Length: 363
Image 1 (cartoon, helix red, strand yellow):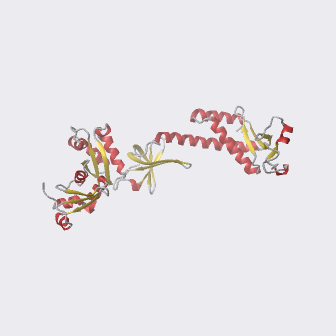
Image 2 (tube, rainbow, N blue to C red):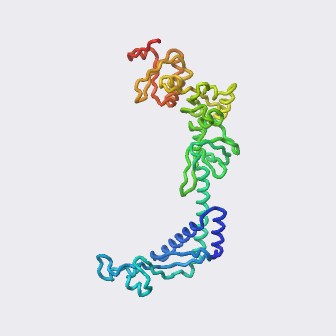
Image 3 (tube, rainbow, N blue to C red):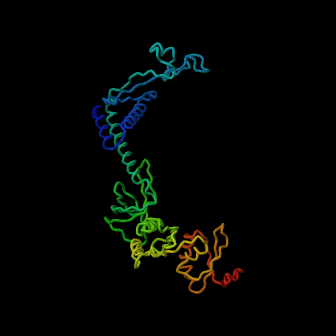
């Protein structure tokens, strides 16, 4: 690659990839300068590329310093490999001042070979950087959002999802337990991380994250997407059960009914995407006791006492079948309710509560 070919390549990259040619020239000069210093050991050197012809020249330079360098009193203290006194410099050029440099061309005869190899590396690097930056502009703000991609590859631990301009990684441990993912199929994924580094662009995906359920509700329920119904919180045990707390600031809107849809059509679409995972839609209430009672659905007739508002601790009394329903299989219902409300929930029956000296009076 001669000078003209390099300039042509730079112009093409600038036009097609949108990379400022000044950035390419600077990177090229820095790379060539580093190579020259490495090969010759001469540190006070620089590389200059003619931006019109592509000609490359290497210069060594001496920095003009004062004849008396501070506490140093004689000229022997001047480092002659890097510096030249003002007196000697002005013998060469009377216009020179302290801090200026005197350049001497030292371009090696075989430097064109080094330049050709370096030019290719620099152009490839800058193209990759530009493409990565462009993708980041498209996907950088997609963290915590839902995307649709195509399942392209699979290895022992991951699926690789084509998102259009880049691939995302869907770890198998982030899939919904029991679901079967087919190669070539379209799939909805939740973006948990977008990170750009020297190794490339990393996009981590999940279908197990609780945010996946929240985005599905936004996608399937118009009242949520337009703000008529609001999602307060989501708690999830992927593949088994999720709880979603919703509410509306409009008194004439039934937030739970809006989420279920006519004959269960809306919630049905969400359940299908979740591979049959069960969903409890509960009404959020600003009163913590009422919210906790709602969150423990399908249990009913519960009595809730907020034990410590600051520590967010609550006692719930349930009897009969409602006791086991409130706790749930392997404690799952209570655990999800606790995540949903952000309260530590202790569930007891009436006898246990009485032993603690806690009695609820029927109103």
